[in-house]
Length: 337
Image 1: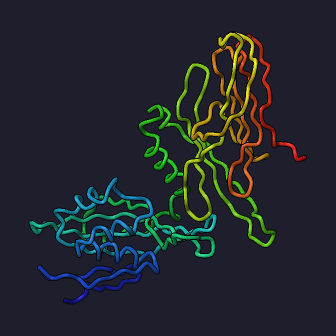
Image 2: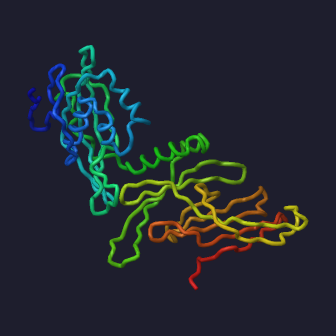
Image 3: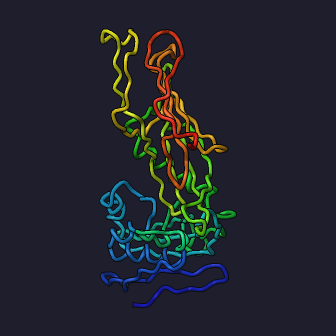
């Protein structure tokens, strides 16, 4: 077995010419964009689809079974790469790599594709466990004509997509809330803000994160929003917000009557807030939920971002359906003692 190794000024073929029935030698190398793509197609040529699937930071298919099914008619693949571009942002290096591939199916027919792979390397110094090496964010290949060398793109533009983080946040929102939020809301552009913050120790370096606000639902007098937070280690997760659980007692047991008592009896968490917004100057999220259209009964909360998380610092409740706006503060940590 001999490698298909061809050098030119702009590219390097990174696949093996494998005789029918032979298996290429195992390769698992994530040290550069070129060797990562070589390892990807090595795994595909060896039918090791779980390994190929693991090279992606953002799954290329809903499940491993779906991903493997896409290659069930593929016998072998050759790949050629160009020169990777690199761009640094928020503790990461993003790469875009021009690629052309020649796939042979089980009937011996050849299919040529070309495009780009986008990759991300999170700086080891900002990572915790589990450690994530260089990973593929996505690949976008289209049918092409000619030879591998002729089809290889000269470049992938000026670099990787301008906002891979936003794209990942969109995918996570659609996956987690696609069956919960309104379909129209899924099409709306999220609002986002970069947050820089410190830690407990003055010796720790300042960290950077990003908050995304997605519209989830729009009703007659309330909008619901979902928030995602991306830290500088690469994690993107939905935010949960603490809210007081209240015991409200009305005169004669009727909500139209006077409020006799209102007590906090515990706390619950919510992943959706009503009529909310993030203030980048104060690093707070404020929410105001109307309990009915006139707005005379409502609840309002404020959550302050500090040391990498949002804390509930104030909560006001207007529990009286009396036609007047007269909230009571049930919790207030917004002013230092």
